[in-house]
Length: 501
Image (cartoon, rainbow, N blue to C red):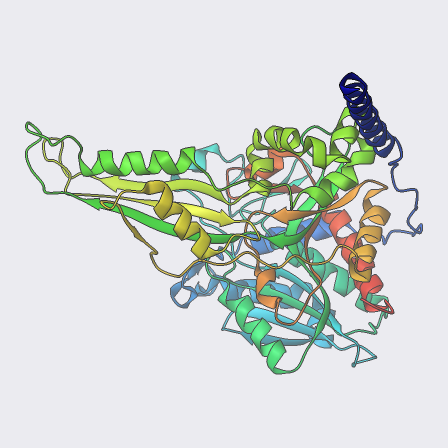
Protein backbone atom coordinates (compact mmCIF):
# COMPACT_ATOMS: atom_id res chain seq x y z
CA UNK A 1 0.00 0.00 0.00
CA UNK A 2 2.81 2.39 0.95
CA UNK A 3 4.66 1.66 -2.31
CA UNK A 4 1.54 2.39 -4.33
CA UNK A 5 1.13 5.79 -2.66
CA UNK A 6 4.80 6.60 -3.27
CA UNK A 7 4.45 5.72 -6.95
CA UNK A 8 1.35 7.92 -7.22
CA UNK A 9 3.14 10.84 -5.56
CA UNK A 10 6.16 10.51 -7.82
CA UNK A 11 4.00 10.21 -10.92
CA UNK A 12 1.97 13.25 -9.89
CA UNK A 13 5.16 15.25 -9.34
CA UNK A 14 6.48 14.25 -12.75
CA UNK A 15 3.19 15.21 -14.39
CA UNK A 16 3.22 18.60 -12.65
CA UNK A 17 6.81 19.21 -13.72
CA UNK A 18 6.05 18.26 -17.32
CA UNK A 19 2.94 20.44 -17.24
CA UNK A 20 4.96 23.40 -15.92
CA UNK A 21 7.58 22.90 -18.64
CA UNK A 22 4.86 22.69 -21.29
CA UNK A 23 3.25 25.92 -20.01
CA UNK A 24 6.61 27.73 -20.05
CA UNK A 25 7.33 26.60 -23.62
CA UNK A 26 3.86 27.59 -24.78
CA UNK A 27 4.24 31.03 -23.17
CA UNK A 28 7.52 31.48 -25.03
CA UNK A 29 6.07 30.32 -28.36
CA UNK A 30 2.94 32.47 -28.39
CA UNK A 31 4.64 35.86 -28.08
CA UNK A 32 5.02 37.63 -31.42
CA UNK A 33 6.18 41.07 -32.54
CA UNK A 34 3.41 43.65 -32.63
CA UNK A 35 1.72 43.46 -36.01
CA UNK A 36 0.13 46.93 -35.94
CA UNK A 37 1.69 49.17 -38.56
CA UNK A 38 1.83 52.92 -37.99
CA UNK A 39 -0.09 55.13 -40.39
CA UNK A 40 2.16 56.10 -43.29
CA UNK A 41 2.96 59.79 -43.55
CA UNK A 42 4.92 62.03 -45.87
CA UNK A 43 7.86 63.40 -43.91
CA UNK A 44 8.28 67.16 -43.80
CA UNK A 45 11.03 68.43 -46.09
CA UNK A 46 13.66 70.15 -43.98
CA UNK A 47 17.12 71.45 -44.85
CA UNK A 48 19.72 69.67 -42.74
CA UNK A 49 22.36 72.31 -43.33
CA UNK A 50 20.03 75.05 -42.07
CA UNK A 51 19.27 72.98 -38.99
CA UNK A 52 23.00 72.40 -38.45
CA UNK A 53 23.74 76.11 -38.78
CA UNK A 54 21.12 76.94 -36.14
CA UNK A 55 22.60 74.43 -33.70
CA UNK A 56 26.17 75.52 -34.45
CA UNK A 57 25.38 79.11 -33.53
CA UNK A 58 23.98 78.26 -30.10
CA UNK A 59 26.89 75.91 -29.39
CA UNK A 60 29.18 78.93 -29.78
CA UNK A 61 27.41 80.52 -26.78
CA UNK A 62 29.27 79.19 -23.75
CA UNK A 63 26.20 78.70 -21.57
CA UNK A 64 28.06 76.68 -18.96
CA UNK A 65 25.80 75.85 -16.06
CA UNK A 66 26.83 77.88 -13.04
CA UNK A 67 25.65 80.88 -11.05
CA UNK A 68 24.56 82.75 -14.15
CA UNK A 69 24.47 86.15 -12.47
CA UNK A 70 28.19 86.39 -13.03
CA UNK A 71 28.64 84.35 -16.18
CA UNK A 72 30.01 86.34 -19.10
CA UNK A 73 31.66 85.54 -22.38
CA UNK A 74 33.87 87.69 -24.57
CA UNK A 75 32.23 89.00 -27.73
CA UNK A 76 34.49 91.03 -29.99
CA UNK A 77 31.70 93.18 -31.40
CA UNK A 78 29.83 94.09 -28.21
CA UNK A 79 32.25 93.59 -25.37
CA UNK A 80 31.32 91.48 -22.35
CA UNK A 81 27.83 89.98 -22.53
CA UNK A 82 26.11 87.14 -20.75
CA UNK A 83 26.23 83.96 -22.89
CA UNK A 84 22.56 83.26 -22.18
CA UNK A 85 21.60 86.70 -23.46
CA UNK A 86 23.73 86.03 -26.52
CA UNK A 87 21.96 82.71 -27.09
CA UNK A 88 18.54 84.36 -26.76
CA UNK A 89 19.40 86.95 -29.39
CA UNK A 90 20.38 84.16 -31.76
CA UNK A 91 17.04 82.40 -31.17
CA UNK A 92 15.12 85.61 -31.88
CA UNK A 93 17.07 86.03 -35.13
CA UNK A 94 16.82 82.45 -36.38
CA UNK A 95 13.16 81.87 -35.50
CA UNK A 96 11.30 85.06 -36.46
CA UNK A 97 7.81 83.50 -36.64
CA UNK A 98 8.25 81.86 -33.23
CA UNK A 99 9.32 85.23 -31.83
CA UNK A 100 6.32 87.03 -33.34
CA UNK A 101 3.51 84.52 -32.85
CA UNK A 102 4.35 82.81 -29.56
CA UNK A 103 4.35 84.56 -26.20
CA UNK A 104 7.76 84.44 -24.53
CA UNK A 105 8.42 84.85 -20.82
CA UNK A 106 11.82 84.87 -19.15
CA UNK A 107 11.64 82.97 -15.90
CA UNK A 108 14.35 83.17 -13.26
CA UNK A 109 16.25 85.58 -15.54
CA UNK A 110 17.34 83.10 -18.20
CA UNK A 111 14.85 80.23 -18.57
CA UNK A 112 12.53 80.60 -21.57
CA UNK A 113 8.83 79.71 -21.54
CA UNK A 114 7.04 79.97 -24.89
CA UNK A 115 3.24 79.75 -25.10
CA UNK A 116 1.44 78.79 -28.32
CA UNK A 117 -2.27 79.18 -27.53
CA UNK A 118 -4.57 76.40 -28.67
CA UNK A 119 -7.91 76.90 -30.36
CA UNK A 120 -9.62 74.83 -27.63
CA UNK A 121 -8.14 76.35 -24.48
CA UNK A 122 -9.94 74.06 -22.00
CA UNK A 123 -8.08 70.98 -23.30
CA UNK A 124 -5.06 69.95 -21.22
CA UNK A 125 -1.95 71.47 -22.77
CA UNK A 126 1.25 69.75 -23.94
CA UNK A 127 4.79 70.79 -23.12
CA UNK A 128 8.10 70.18 -24.89
CA UNK A 129 11.22 70.71 -22.80
CA UNK A 130 14.98 71.02 -23.26
CA UNK A 131 17.73 73.02 -21.58
CA UNK A 132 20.11 75.73 -22.70
CA UNK A 133 23.03 75.04 -20.36
CA UNK A 134 25.97 72.69 -20.80
CA UNK A 135 28.61 71.16 -18.55
CA UNK A 136 32.14 72.59 -18.51
CA UNK A 137 34.95 71.23 -20.65
CA UNK A 138 38.09 69.88 -19.00
CA UNK A 139 40.79 72.21 -20.31
CA UNK A 140 43.41 69.48 -20.04
CA UNK A 141 41.49 67.49 -22.69
CA UNK A 142 41.23 70.25 -25.31
CA UNK A 143 43.92 68.70 -27.51
CA UNK A 144 41.83 65.52 -27.73
CA UNK A 145 38.87 67.25 -29.38
CA UNK A 146 38.70 66.96 -33.17
CA UNK A 147 37.21 70.46 -33.25
CA UNK A 148 37.21 73.11 -30.48
CA UNK A 149 34.33 72.44 -28.07
CA UNK A 150 32.69 75.84 -28.50
CA UNK A 151 33.44 76.45 -32.19
CA UNK A 152 30.21 74.84 -33.39
CA UNK A 153 32.02 73.27 -36.31
CA UNK A 154 29.99 71.62 -39.07
CA UNK A 155 32.19 68.94 -40.57
CA UNK A 156 32.16 65.28 -41.66
CA UNK A 157 28.37 65.20 -41.53
CA UNK A 158 28.21 66.31 -37.89
CA UNK A 159 27.80 69.39 -35.74
CA UNK A 160 30.57 69.34 -33.15
CA UNK A 161 30.74 70.91 -29.73
CA UNK A 162 29.63 70.94 -26.12
CA UNK A 163 25.85 70.69 -26.00
CA UNK A 164 25.49 69.16 -29.46
CA UNK A 165 23.84 66.09 -27.90
CA UNK A 166 23.11 67.33 -24.38
CA UNK A 167 20.82 68.92 -25.25
CA UNK A 168 20.88 72.02 -27.41
CA UNK A 169 19.94 69.80 -30.36
CA UNK A 170 16.54 69.19 -28.77
CA UNK A 171 16.01 72.91 -28.17
CA UNK A 172 16.88 74.00 -31.72
CA UNK A 173 15.01 71.21 -33.49
CA UNK A 174 11.91 71.95 -31.41
CA UNK A 175 12.12 75.58 -32.50
CA UNK A 176 12.79 74.52 -36.10
CA UNK A 177 9.69 72.31 -35.95
CA UNK A 178 7.48 75.10 -34.59
CA UNK A 179 8.86 77.58 -37.13
CA UNK A 180 8.04 75.08 -39.90
CA UNK A 181 4.49 74.54 -38.63
CA UNK A 182 3.90 78.29 -38.36
CA UNK A 183 4.99 78.71 -41.98
CA UNK A 184 2.46 76.04 -42.94
CA UNK A 185 -0.28 77.92 -41.11
CA UNK A 186 -0.78 75.15 -38.52
CA UNK A 187 -2.84 76.06 -35.45
CA UNK A 188 -2.81 73.71 -32.46
CA UNK A 189 -6.04 72.66 -30.73
CA UNK A 190 -4.28 72.21 -27.41
CA UNK A 191 -2.03 74.94 -26.06
CA UNK A 192 1.61 74.07 -26.70
CA UNK A 193 4.38 75.14 -24.32
CA UNK A 194 8.11 75.15 -25.02
CA UNK A 195 10.16 75.26 -21.82
CA UNK A 196 13.93 75.71 -21.96
CA UNK A 197 15.62 75.74 -18.57
CA UNK A 198 18.98 77.41 -18.02
CA UNK A 199 20.47 75.35 -15.17
CA UNK A 200 19.44 71.73 -15.61
CA UNK A 201 23.03 70.58 -15.21
CA UNK A 202 23.22 72.01 -11.69
CA UNK A 203 19.95 72.49 -9.80
CA UNK A 204 17.13 72.92 -12.31
CA UNK A 205 15.75 76.02 -10.60
CA UNK A 206 14.60 77.47 -13.93
CA UNK A 207 12.38 74.49 -14.74
CA UNK A 208 11.17 74.37 -11.16
CA UNK A 209 9.99 77.99 -11.36
CA UNK A 210 8.36 77.47 -14.77
CA UNK A 211 6.44 74.48 -13.41
CA UNK A 212 5.39 76.47 -10.33
CA UNK A 213 4.19 79.36 -12.51
CA UNK A 214 2.08 77.06 -14.69
CA UNK A 215 0.61 75.40 -11.59
CA UNK A 216 -0.23 78.82 -10.13
CA UNK A 217 -2.09 79.64 -13.37
CA UNK A 218 -4.11 76.45 -13.09
CA UNK A 219 -2.45 74.77 -16.08
CA UNK A 220 -2.82 71.02 -16.38
CA UNK A 221 -0.60 69.23 -18.88
CA UNK A 222 -1.92 66.27 -20.83
CA UNK A 223 1.59 65.18 -21.81
CA UNK A 224 5.21 66.29 -21.66
CA UNK A 225 8.37 65.20 -23.44
CA UNK A 226 11.89 66.10 -22.33
CA UNK A 227 15.36 64.77 -23.06
CA UNK A 228 16.03 61.16 -22.18
CA UNK A 229 16.45 57.82 -23.87
CA UNK A 230 16.72 57.47 -27.65
CA UNK A 231 16.64 55.08 -30.59
CA UNK A 232 19.49 52.70 -29.82
CA UNK A 233 21.17 51.72 -33.05
CA UNK A 234 22.94 48.74 -31.53
CA UNK A 235 19.95 47.78 -29.46
CA UNK A 236 19.86 46.70 -25.86
CA UNK A 237 22.80 44.47 -24.81
CA UNK A 238 22.06 40.99 -26.13
CA UNK A 239 19.82 42.21 -28.99
CA UNK A 240 20.97 43.02 -32.50
CA UNK A 241 17.97 45.08 -33.60
CA UNK A 242 17.41 48.82 -33.06
CA UNK A 243 15.22 49.61 -30.07
CA UNK A 244 13.50 52.88 -29.19
CA UNK A 245 13.49 53.49 -25.44
CA UNK A 246 11.18 55.96 -23.74
CA UNK A 247 12.00 57.04 -20.20
CA UNK A 248 8.81 56.74 -18.15
CA UNK A 249 10.63 57.61 -14.93
CA UNK A 250 13.99 58.76 -13.61
CA UNK A 251 16.16 57.81 -10.68
CA UNK A 252 16.69 60.00 -7.67
CA UNK A 253 20.04 61.16 -6.34
CA UNK A 254 21.77 61.40 -3.00
CA UNK A 255 25.34 62.30 -2.10
CA UNK A 256 26.68 61.36 1.33
CA UNK A 257 29.98 62.44 2.84
CA UNK A 258 31.83 59.88 4.92
CA UNK A 259 34.61 61.21 7.12
CA UNK A 260 36.98 60.00 9.82
CA UNK A 261 38.98 62.08 12.31
CA UNK A 262 41.97 60.67 14.18
CA UNK A 263 44.70 62.25 16.34
CA UNK A 264 47.65 63.38 14.19
CA UNK A 265 51.14 62.07 14.86
CA UNK A 266 54.39 60.97 13.30
CA UNK A 267 54.19 58.28 10.65
CA UNK A 268 57.03 56.40 12.33
CA UNK A 269 54.72 55.27 15.13
CA UNK A 270 51.28 54.70 13.59
CA UNK A 271 48.23 53.16 15.24
CA UNK A 272 46.75 49.98 13.78
CA UNK A 273 44.64 52.06 11.41
CA UNK A 274 44.84 55.62 10.15
CA UNK A 275 41.83 57.75 9.28
CA UNK A 276 42.46 56.87 5.62
CA UNK A 277 42.56 53.15 6.40
CA UNK A 278 39.33 53.29 8.41
CA UNK A 279 37.57 55.24 5.68
CA UNK A 280 38.89 52.93 2.95
CA UNK A 281 37.43 49.88 4.66
CA UNK A 282 34.07 51.61 5.00
CA UNK A 283 34.07 52.49 1.30
CA UNK A 284 35.10 48.96 0.34
CA UNK A 285 32.19 47.56 2.36
CA UNK A 286 29.76 49.88 0.56
CA UNK A 287 31.04 48.83 -2.86
CA UNK A 288 30.92 45.15 -1.93
CA UNK A 289 27.38 45.40 -0.57
CA UNK A 290 25.19 47.43 -2.95
CA UNK A 291 21.49 47.82 -2.39
CA UNK A 292 19.38 44.88 -3.60
CA UNK A 293 18.63 44.43 -7.30
CA UNK A 294 15.10 43.97 -8.61
CA UNK A 295 13.60 43.22 -12.01
CA UNK A 296 10.55 45.38 -11.25
CA UNK A 297 11.54 48.29 -13.49
CA UNK A 298 12.82 46.20 -16.42
CA UNK A 299 9.86 43.84 -16.70
CA UNK A 300 8.03 46.10 -19.20
CA UNK A 301 11.21 46.38 -21.28
CA UNK A 302 11.77 42.61 -21.25
CA UNK A 303 8.14 42.04 -22.20
CA UNK A 304 8.52 44.23 -25.30
CA UNK A 305 11.84 42.65 -26.29
CA UNK A 306 10.75 39.04 -25.78
CA UNK A 307 9.17 38.56 -29.24
CA UNK A 308 12.36 39.79 -30.93
CA UNK A 309 14.76 37.58 -28.97
CA UNK A 310 16.07 34.04 -29.28
CA UNK A 311 13.92 31.18 -28.02
CA UNK A 312 15.97 30.83 -24.84
CA UNK A 313 15.61 34.55 -24.10
CA UNK A 314 11.86 34.34 -24.79
CA UNK A 315 11.62 31.36 -22.47
CA UNK A 316 13.34 33.32 -19.71
CA UNK A 317 11.58 36.67 -20.25
CA UNK A 318 8.08 35.16 -20.36
CA UNK A 319 8.69 33.02 -17.28
CA UNK A 320 10.44 35.31 -14.86
CA UNK A 321 8.80 33.46 -11.97
CA UNK A 322 11.17 30.62 -12.82
CA UNK A 323 14.16 32.31 -14.48
CA UNK A 324 14.11 35.73 -12.79
CA UNK A 325 17.24 34.95 -10.79
CA UNK A 326 19.19 33.96 -13.90
CA UNK A 327 18.02 37.03 -15.85
CA UNK A 328 18.94 39.29 -12.96
CA UNK A 329 22.39 37.69 -12.69
CA UNK A 330 23.04 38.33 -16.39
CA UNK A 331 21.80 41.93 -16.34
CA UNK A 332 23.94 42.78 -13.34
CA UNK A 333 27.07 42.03 -15.38
CA UNK A 334 26.64 45.19 -17.48
CA UNK A 335 26.96 48.58 -15.72
CA UNK A 336 24.19 49.99 -17.97
CA UNK A 337 21.62 47.30 -17.20
CA UNK A 338 22.75 46.92 -13.58
CA UNK A 339 21.84 50.59 -13.11
CA UNK A 340 18.25 49.77 -14.15
CA UNK A 341 17.93 47.13 -11.44
CA UNK A 342 19.00 48.89 -8.27
CA UNK A 343 20.05 51.99 -6.42
CA UNK A 344 23.69 52.33 -7.45
CA UNK A 345 26.68 53.26 -5.31
CA UNK A 346 29.59 55.30 -6.70
CA UNK A 347 32.54 56.60 -4.68
CA UNK A 348 33.35 59.76 -6.63
CA UNK A 349 35.62 61.95 -4.45
CA UNK A 350 38.17 61.31 -1.71
CA UNK A 351 40.71 63.36 0.20
CA UNK A 352 43.01 62.86 3.15
CA UNK A 353 46.49 63.48 4.45
CA UNK A 354 48.64 66.61 4.60
CA UNK A 355 52.21 65.28 4.43
CA UNK A 356 53.89 61.97 3.78
CA UNK A 357 55.31 61.66 7.33
CA UNK A 358 52.26 62.94 9.24
CA UNK A 359 49.43 60.64 10.26
CA UNK A 360 46.32 62.01 8.54
CA UNK A 361 44.08 63.81 11.05
CA UNK A 362 41.13 63.81 8.64
CA UNK A 363 39.94 61.77 5.67
CA UNK A 364 36.72 62.25 3.76
CA UNK A 365 34.94 60.85 0.72
CA UNK A 366 31.77 61.63 -1.19
CA UNK A 367 29.57 58.76 -2.34
CA UNK A 368 26.85 59.33 -4.93
CA UNK A 369 23.77 57.12 -4.99
CA UNK A 370 21.23 57.02 -7.82
CA UNK A 371 17.95 55.96 -6.28
CA UNK A 372 15.70 53.46 -8.01
CA UNK A 373 11.95 54.04 -7.60
CA UNK A 374 10.92 52.28 -4.42
CA UNK A 375 14.08 53.22 -2.49
CA UNK A 376 13.88 56.44 -0.48
CA UNK A 377 16.62 58.77 0.69
CA UNK A 378 16.09 57.46 4.21
CA UNK A 379 16.41 53.87 2.97
CA UNK A 380 19.83 54.70 1.51
CA UNK A 381 21.03 56.45 4.67
CA UNK A 382 19.91 53.46 6.76
CA UNK A 383 21.66 51.08 4.36
CA UNK A 384 24.92 53.05 4.56
CA UNK A 385 24.88 53.15 8.36
CA UNK A 386 24.17 49.43 8.61
CA UNK A 387 26.79 48.50 5.99
CA UNK A 388 29.57 50.72 7.33
CA UNK A 389 28.78 49.62 10.89
CA UNK A 390 31.61 51.70 12.34
CA UNK A 391 30.93 54.53 14.78
CA UNK A 392 34.29 56.10 13.88
CA UNK A 393 32.92 56.94 10.43
CA UNK A 394 30.77 60.06 10.40
CA UNK A 395 28.00 60.15 7.76
CA UNK A 396 26.66 63.53 6.60
CA UNK A 397 24.50 64.97 3.83
CA UNK A 398 26.57 67.80 2.33
CA UNK A 399 24.65 70.68 0.76
CA UNK A 400 21.15 69.95 -0.50
CA UNK A 401 19.19 66.99 0.79
CA UNK A 402 18.82 64.14 -1.66
CA UNK A 403 16.24 63.88 -4.44
CA UNK A 404 13.73 61.06 -4.43
CA UNK A 405 13.12 58.99 -7.55
CA UNK A 406 10.27 60.16 -9.78
CA UNK A 407 6.91 58.54 -10.19
CA UNK A 408 6.55 56.17 -13.15
CA UNK A 409 4.40 57.54 -15.99
CA UNK A 410 1.94 55.12 -17.61
CA UNK A 411 2.90 53.23 -20.75
CA UNK A 412 -0.76 52.57 -21.48
CA UNK A 413 -1.96 56.16 -21.97
CA UNK A 414 -3.10 57.60 -25.33
CA UNK A 415 -0.17 60.05 -25.09
CA UNK A 416 2.32 57.17 -24.83
CA UNK A 417 0.66 55.30 -27.70
CA UNK A 418 0.85 58.38 -29.94
CA UNK A 419 4.49 58.86 -28.95
CA UNK A 420 5.25 55.25 -29.95
CA UNK A 421 3.40 55.63 -33.24
CA UNK A 422 5.27 58.84 -34.07
CA UNK A 423 8.60 57.16 -33.35
CA UNK A 424 7.78 54.35 -35.76
CA UNK A 425 6.53 56.76 -38.41
CA UNK A 426 9.85 58.62 -38.35
CA UNK A 427 12.38 55.87 -37.60
CA UNK A 428 10.67 52.79 -39.00
CA UNK A 429 8.92 49.85 -37.38
CA UNK A 430 10.89 48.67 -34.37
CA UNK A 431 10.21 47.68 -30.76
CA UNK A 432 9.43 50.68 -28.56
CA UNK A 433 9.80 50.06 -24.86
CA UNK A 434 9.55 51.96 -21.58
CA UNK A 435 12.69 52.29 -19.49
CA UNK A 436 14.12 54.06 -16.48
CA UNK A 437 16.36 57.09 -17.05
CA UNK A 438 19.35 56.78 -14.74
CA UNK A 439 20.27 60.49 -14.83
CA UNK A 440 18.28 63.58 -13.87
CA UNK A 441 16.19 65.77 -16.18
CA UNK A 442 14.12 68.92 -15.81
CA UNK A 443 11.01 66.80 -16.41
CA UNK A 444 10.77 65.83 -12.74
CA UNK A 445 9.75 69.37 -11.78
CA UNK A 446 6.49 69.12 -13.74
CA UNK A 447 5.12 66.11 -11.85
CA UNK A 448 2.67 68.31 -9.92
CA UNK A 449 0.86 69.29 -13.12
CA UNK A 450 1.40 66.28 -15.40
CA UNK A 451 1.07 62.51 -15.13
CA UNK A 452 2.20 61.63 -18.66
CA UNK A 453 5.87 62.64 -18.48
CA UNK A 454 8.12 61.00 -21.07
CA UNK A 455 11.86 61.37 -21.53
CA UNK A 456 12.86 60.79 -25.13
CA UNK A 457 15.42 62.33 -27.46
CA UNK A 458 14.43 61.46 -31.04
CA UNK A 459 17.91 60.59 -32.32
CA UNK A 460 19.62 57.37 -33.36
CA UNK A 461 22.53 56.76 -31.02
CA UNK A 462 25.23 54.16 -30.48
CA UNK A 463 27.74 53.32 -27.79
CA UNK A 464 30.25 55.81 -29.18
CA UNK A 465 27.67 58.61 -28.95
CA UNK A 466 26.90 57.81 -25.32
CA UNK A 467 30.57 58.10 -24.37
CA UNK A 468 30.77 61.58 -25.94
CA UNK A 469 27.99 63.07 -23.78
CA UNK A 470 29.70 65.12 -21.04
CA UNK A 471 32.90 63.79 -22.55
CA UNK A 472 35.32 64.47 -25.39
CA UNK A 473 34.28 65.10 -28.99
CA UNK A 474 30.55 65.64 -28.40
CA UNK A 475 28.70 65.75 -31.71
CA UNK A 476 25.44 64.98 -33.49
CA UNK A 477 24.88 64.07 -37.11
CA UNK A 478 23.07 66.34 -39.55
CA UNK A 479 20.87 63.36 -40.43
CA UNK A 480 19.80 63.11 -36.79
CA UNK A 481 18.90 66.81 -36.76
CA UNK A 482 16.65 66.24 -39.76
CA UNK A 483 14.92 63.27 -38.11
CA UNK A 484 14.53 65.15 -34.82
CA UNK A 485 12.86 68.09 -36.53
CA UNK A 486 10.55 65.82 -38.53
CA UNK A 487 9.69 63.94 -35.35
CA UNK A 488 8.72 67.07 -33.43
CA UNK A 489 6.69 68.37 -36.38
CA UNK A 490 4.61 65.18 -36.26
CA UNK A 491 4.40 64.83 -32.47
CA UNK A 492 3.26 68.43 -31.97
CA UNK A 493 0.45 67.79 -34.45
CA UNK A 494 -0.41 64.34 -33.07
CA UNK A 495 -0.56 65.40 -29.44
CA UNK A 496 -2.21 68.74 -30.19
CA UNK A 497 -5.10 67.17 -32.09
CA UNK A 498 -5.50 64.03 -29.97
CA UNK A 499 -9.03 63.57 -28.65
CA UNK A 500 -7.60 62.32 -25.35
CA UNK A 501 -4.19 62.16 -23.70
